[in-house]
Image (cartoon, rainbow, N blue to C red; front, side, top):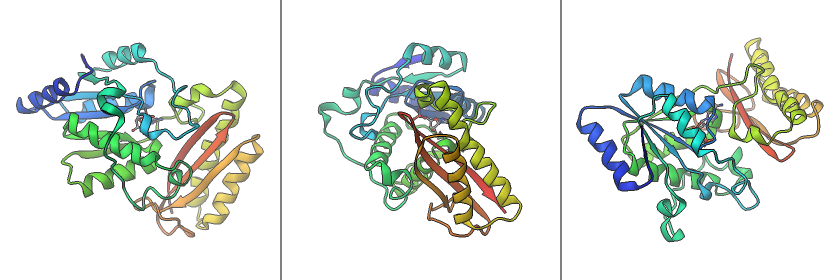
Length: 281
Ligand code: AMP
């Protein structure tokens, strides 16, 4: 496994692999790797000949007062996990390598970034699309793997790739959960054991909603009200949003006619948790 901190060496390694006839898969991450990230690596390895992971805590996607300084950084362990998982190349740039001098161009996707997390984290998605567009230039892979855990991010990146004619296939992968339902997240490390117990209400509420939709409930208001109650009953939490949206364009639905995505963001203690689930009638 090669660990490469500089741009030219990284791009040359990807291009050389492609020239030798290999399909290259890319897994962008902010590190503090867990089995959710590793599921993307497994998907990349299954679909490609060479797998590249990027580890970069991207400052431009954090807002003022968010957790950039305290975000978990565990590079040594991450590299061990990558090695064990059969990753071929890890790109580990410094902030100065990605944003020399601090000045940069911004990639902005309209509409899809306005609602859900976009309404609570202004400019977050500009930071995400800008860094992912840059990573796609540095590692011009054939396919890139993203988790449905960050569902809005996945939809936004698919749109960016279409709009900018970037020749990389975007592959969405299912959310990996603990056996009790909690979606794996690097930020789960911030939860105390009581808060973690309380956080189980998110997946419990979403899974109950999925059952209700399958049994015929199609009223989005009724569904979101029940989800909110389940979360509020579990303990003190600040619910940013619970929303039933169209799975393709993320517009709010009042009624579920076929497929929908239920997305939520909740603050428990110092931790902002997001989760979502696909539902269909
Ligand atoms: P992050 O390091 O949080 O920026 O995440 C890097 C990638 O891993 C993103 O595509 C996430 O959607 C994905 N990811 C994070 N948590 C999970 C999970 N529990 N299951 C599947 N993918 C995940």
